[in-house]
Each structure stands twice: as C-alpha cells, then as structure tokens.
Length: 470
Ligand code: URP
Ligand code: ZN
Ligand code: ZN
Image 1 (tube, protein in one colour):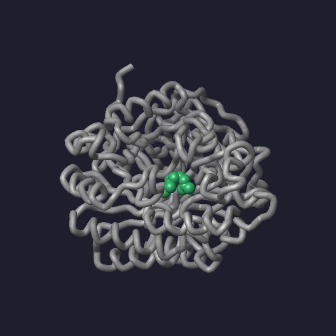
Image 2 (cartoon, protein in one colour):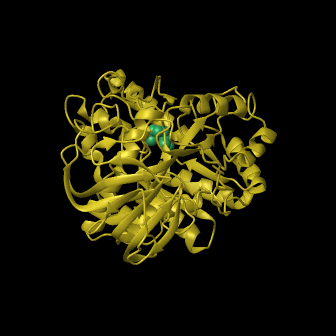
Image 3 (cartoon, protein in one colour):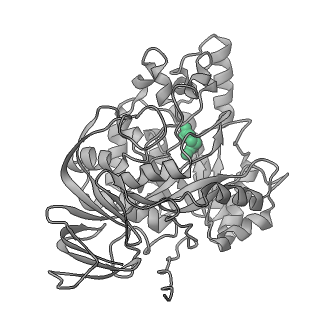
C-alpha cells in the first residue's frame, strides 16, 4: 500500500513548509515539492496541516482503581485516541501488590491483545518491591521495551510507595537506562487531611481539592527531584498542576539536571470552582492532583511555552459519572479519581494554545508529539515527519468547526470535561503506519491493527523497524 499526501502544510517541532509526503508500506519514504509519483491512495491536503501522529505518554485503560475499573478498555480508549489524532500512547501497568512484574506484564498484554487500534507501549508502576517484584526483575524490564518506572507518592493504602521503594527504584533506573516517573504528592499528609475533613462531616466533592493543597504537590516534587539527584537517575514528573510544582522543576532544569515535567490538558481549562458544581456534578472533576485555583492556568501556559514543562498528556482515566463517580456521593474520598481526555487534547491545545496565541504550531507539535516520543524511547519512529519514520500522520483541517460533546465522543464515559466547547480545527484523516485509521467520522481500520512497541532505553533512539519481506 502506498499513500501520497499532496500539498499540505507539513509541521514538525522544527519545520513548517508546504510539500508532499509519500508513504510506502509502513514508513515515510519521500518528502518533496510537487512529487510526480503513482500511489494507491492520494490525499489532497491543500489548506490542511500535516502533523505527526500525537503521542500520549500518560493513560490508564482497563485499570482497576478506586474500587472499580476504568470504563475505557484498550479498544474504546484507543478508538477515542485515534479520532483525536493520537496514534501511539504509553499506558501504565500497575503491579498488583504481592505480584511479580512478569505476572503484571502478562495480565496487561492480555487485556490489549486483539483490541489494539493504535500503537502502544507500557510503563511499569512499581507498588511493592518486598512481597512481589524483585529488583532483578525490575532491572530486566527495559530489555523488554518497558523503559520507564512509575512511582505513586500518594494514594496511601493503595498504590503509594514509601521513600525507600522510590529511592531503590531510582537506583535501579540509574543502572538500567529507565526513566523514573513520579506522581508527586505527599500521600501521608493528604491522608491526615482527608481523615480530618471526613471526621468534621465534610463529604462533598470539593473537599477532594481542599485536602490536597498545592504545597503537598510542591513538597513531593522537590523530594523526588532531590532523591533522583542522589540516585543519579533521570526524572519525569507527571501531571503537574500548580506553581508550587512548576518552581522546583524550573530550578532543577536551570541547574541542568535531568528533570522534566508534564502537565495535562484539563489543568489549563478546569479550575477549583468546577468541583463546587451542584447536584454532585463536581465529582466529574475529581482527579488527582485536583483542579487548582484559576491563576495556575497562566503559570502552566507560561511553563509549556518556555520549556519549564515539556509535555502535555491527558492522564485519561475515565469513569462513568453515573454508577462509578457516584460511589462517592456520601464521601468524596470514595469518588474514583480520574477524568477522560484522550480524544480532545489536540483540538483543545490547538484552539486555546495556538489559536489563542499562547504557543506556536511548532511548539504544539513538540509538546504533543516530539517530546513525548523522545523522552519515552519512541523517537524518531514516532513523534515526527521524516523519511524513515513510521507513517503515523494526521491530516488536520484547521478550519473545521467542532462542538465538543459526550454525545459524539468515542470514549465509553458519559460526560466530557470540555462539554460544549467550540473549537476550530480537527483531525480529518489519521494514518497509522501507512494505513488509514480514521477518515472523517469513520474508523476505517479494524481493532488489531495496533502494535506493542518495544521502546528504546532513556536517551537512545528507536530505529525504524526492519522491513518485513513480502
Ligand atoms: O486522578 C487521576 N489522575 N487518576 C489516574 C491515576 C493517576 O494518579 O494518574
Ligand atoms: Zn497520578
Ligand atoms: Zn495518571
């Protein structure tokens, strides 16, 4: 199969020019001006943007959490991703306490088999080095393409690890070429605040935020940075939500340390007041870290513009409002933490970042495609448009008007964080390794087309896959 994409505005983190892209099999084989070449399919991209498929490094599909399981499985979550222009994501395997890492990998791969709509990799969330996972086993994961370890510094009594586990994992990462990711909040302090609030009779959703003040995020972010410095491992702080967490990351980066930060789409748009919405509507916005005071939104836009933060992910962790979020009607601490977002990241960041004059188109590509691909061992196969790269391509119509709504989304959840938001600009055609995945409102390809990607170790490049002989 060959595809010729003609006359589009080709955008990468560095380039912006009009040209033709020729795809042969799974990869881009030629880029040029007015290519005169036969192809099985020709896409007229005049007036359109030709973007690399977006990479989402932070998702939770089919994940047991908070007494339930996230509503999007691999098929529905990846379908939502595909319609949103995301062609590769990295999901979290959670090591069940007491289990080996191998058991956890088998379990997660089993959930994905046959259902994959886009390409994917895994991070390993370490919960227990004493009972189940051994340090040797952890050290072997990068050789299997699982090249990042995640530690939760919050969710006491569930996923939270102590500093010993955090630090030991960092030491392993320093040896094996893995990137350490942290959910940075002080889980012990938060646990005290939650118990106190409940004892005082505070049960409503907004207490989720009041019991997780920004200082608890700032403290844990700084602690993780200092410990990573001692262990000499690279560190990536997920879902940064506030000034208190941006500042220690900024300081570390100014010192030239190997520290990166990510924020998520929702933190630019949803603020604390959403949690106060009546009739338990506020529960839709119960995710962690919580929506913050509005002034943090400018801090985050400035941080992504100036590379204090280097990635925008979704942290897609979708639950139904009716039936899952409502488990916490009488107790905010029982509301499953997480929100949807896989489908709308590109639309929202294009609308309010680029069209809003806050970031350039090149920077948008860097934040949504290139930086996540580089940091997570997917580049240059993913995250750019270049000869030899996988033909994961989004033909984006910058004039298409869309009103975002749960009625039209592909996630299985029953609400959308951005309900009613009007955007101009949306994916029109999405290719995955040269095959048409989405065309207009249609999912063209069948589940099973997506593949597991064995990611490169931190700082190494992922070479193009060898061509398979016919
Ligand atoms: O509330 C959230 N973010 N849920 C997903 C798990 C996590 O902390 O990333
Ligand atoms: Zn988290
Ligand atoms: Zn998450």
